[in-house]
Length: 348
Image (cartoon, rainbow, N blue to C red; front, side):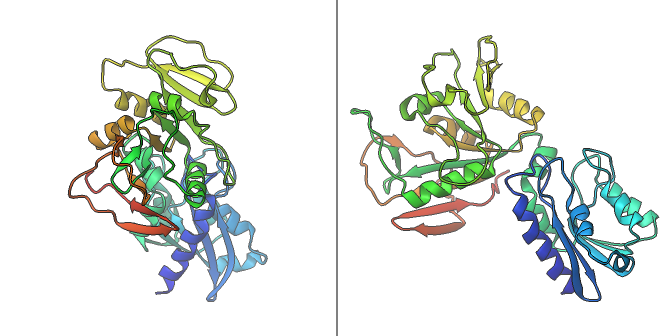
């Protein structure tokens, strides 16, 4: 189908913005005239031109716009944000036909861009590859409908389902390969924030940065109820923006923001609310076992990546458990390790 072909290209283009557009959604746009693509664009970076703007700017002969179709994976915006409304630009350029993948879930836009275009006499088609387009912006949808970040859980485990040995010598079990470590850093670059518990911060002293991949470091999040974490830890070095959730009052410092919450109550809803207010769209949960299990038990997750290593540990820290009957939907081999992936939480 002609329309599906061009919406697929919109999705392909949109994915180029994965690491830079949050809290905005990834969007791609294609302009077609006489069966030929004359312009393409995607939302490159938050605060800059939207996909439709970039696609229109790429057209060399703008006179062709008056008899073209613009395909866009997400409904064109109709409100003034950091940029003017894309629906107004489409009307101004006299593009007669608009094909849209899915409607915008954002309350300030939802349906209004479509209405504005139709009231201007434009032909508007909505819902081409709708599920694929919604999947593309699943993080944006989660933030704007559930009022929390999109949560991805990640851990590495042995063949007998342990994530670490008993630390009698202080040395952790090596369960990841260089290739899978690179993949983890890629996932860090693709998420707004990364979170660990207090025990992981002390035992592993992780930097939680993007070192083996290109991209910006995620905001680091750590739990430190009594503010007893040693200041010598990498996570408190101030090199990357870091949120520390605690029960104590503490002044914020350079790149270190201390946030007081009530640890006598369920802390996860409190944290999710604060992250939503800060427009943190996605969080990668890297451990440890207690923190990962808390998210699972609260049914507070959207994707899971489990790296399974052939090594047998026989004892140690048990891996988190989702369900005895749960099966992983995707399996990828990376040398000696296998990456299992649950692409979405169907229990929600």
